[in-house]
Structures are given as C-alpha cells and as structure tokens.
Length: 362
Image 1 (cartoon, rainbow, N blue to C red):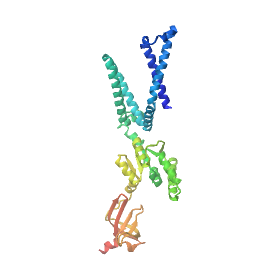
Image 2 (cartoon, rainbow, N blue to C red; image 1 turned 90 degrees about the vertical axis):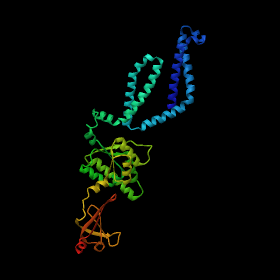
Image 3 (tube, rainbow, N blue to C red; image 1 turned 120 degrees about the horizontal axis):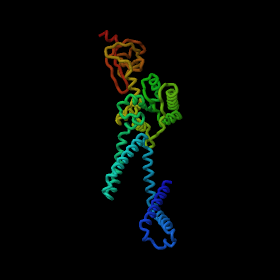
Image 4 (tube, rainbow, N blue to C red; image 1 turned 135 degrees about the vertical axis):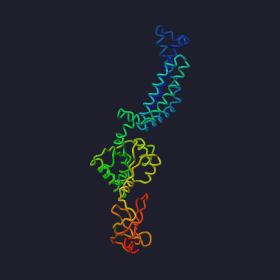
C-alpha cells in the first residue's frame, strides 16, 4: 500500500513536470500537437502531463521499494516514541519553521542564491526547533496541563500527580495495599499492562506455588483498585523492542517521570544505575522496625540453634533475628537478654545479644 502511494505521488509530480515543461518550452515541441487547432494547447498539456507521469513512474519504480522500506522504519520509530516526546518535538519543529518563514523575506534581495539559502535555513531551524522541543518536553507538558510555564510553581501539583509504578514482586508481596491504605503513598498508582500479563502468566502456571502467588497478586490489585481511596491507572502501552519486564519498568519510569515501587534488590540497583527514582518496600520495612540500641535489655524466646557453637536464635515480633551468645541451652525458654551490637545488612537488621544471667555472673 505504501509503495502504491509513493508511485502515485511520483506520477503526480511527473504530470506536473510535463505540464509545466509544455507551457515553458511549448514552441519547441513537434508540430503534430498543433494539428488539433484551437484545442492544441489543451491536448499538448495533457499529452505532456501523461508522458511526464509515465516517465517518472518508470524511474520511481526502481527506487520505490527502498523509499517504502525507509519510510516504514521512520514511521515505526515515530510510533514507538512516547506521546509527550512526540508532541514536544512537533511543537519545536513548528516553532523552528515559523522562525525560518520570518527570516525568508530578508533574503529576497539575493535572488536565486537567497532561495537556496532560505531552504538551508528552513532545514536548520526545523531541526533545531525539534531538538529544543525534545529537550523542553517537561516544561511543555506543565504548560499544556496547567497553563503555567514555571516548574517551581507546579512542584506541589506535580507531587500530587507523581506516578508510582508497581512491579510484579511488590504486587505479589501484598504489603503495598496496606501502605496505600495508610496514606503514605501519594500520587497515582500505575499498573502497566505488561505487568498484568506477567501476573496472569504466573497465575496460570502448572506449579501450585506459582499459581497461588499469581492469584494473590491479582487479588491485591483488585483490592487496591476497588477498596482503597487512591488513584489507579492501567498503562496500556508497551515497549515491544524490550523483552525484559524490569527493563520495561525502567523505561516507563523515565517516560512518566515517575518512581518504581519494588522489593526486588536487583531492580533497585538497575534503577539507581539509570538514575530512576525507586521506592523499596523492604527498605521501608527496615526503617520502621523498632530501634534497639546496644546496652538495652529485652525479653525474647530462644527458638533454635545458631550457626556457631553454643549460639541460640530468637526473633522480635517484626521478624528481626537475634543471635544470643550461649543461648543454646535456653532453647524454648523466655529470657531477658542484653543487646551487645546491632548489624544492618541489605537483607535486614540482625541483633547480637547475650543472656542477662551471664552478665550478672560476670
């Protein structure tokens, strides 16, 4: 279809060329055209237009495939561009062309040379306008949505409209629903269509554990969307040139100028490397755990053996592990221990302690 359109356009150009050529150099054409008397001018115009169209279409057919292939890729590249970038580029391009149009009359005194320079100025201004528009896409977006240019004036509004993009792991985890319910998450919750498809794939898995995890994730999304007082947006777009879901999330965060919400350690690192804001649920959980300082005394129940000889392991109510030196002989007992040190790791917080009885014995 595109090839036919190109050939039709080339044929019209050839017809216009033949028609123009006849009227500018008609006296040099064969006398046979003049045999039609008073209508020779009309017939001559039609004949030359047809010959021009046929000639141009014959020449164009040799390169139509290549032109169609190039246009197909250009159209594909533009169709994959986010709408905010495409709009900003178009606005900048129009601005550049308007500037070139204003400069064009000043070159009239140069004659033909001025026309050639004008074409060059038009191309340069159009390209510069497109690049400037792409660079100012955020400011153009704020101007479009609010009618104000200053980003500083819109900081509060943009904060309210900030997008929080959920990944698969944080949806399955389920804690995001409770966090949203408390009101600590502001802005719009974004659930990408490709994340929903991954959840659906997990929910349809033949493995029982995976199937249960996928269904839990879908239930959590249903709860967020229907029960909680928070804005939820299903992002229908996709990035077909990217296969990995994590990479798509990073790309989407850049497009929407939003933040990725996850509890995936690797995705957290990838976002940091690509300068994408990320909210890690595990970091939040560690931050709100009760603060235990060395020297404090707490009551714990020793549950099991530790890795080292004589050690016992206990847990706080929030799941923080406590390694009790010499606590092996107190397994199953509730006892008072003295905190000796606290270690914060990427996996969480670990507390080291020893029985209060040992402290008194010393």
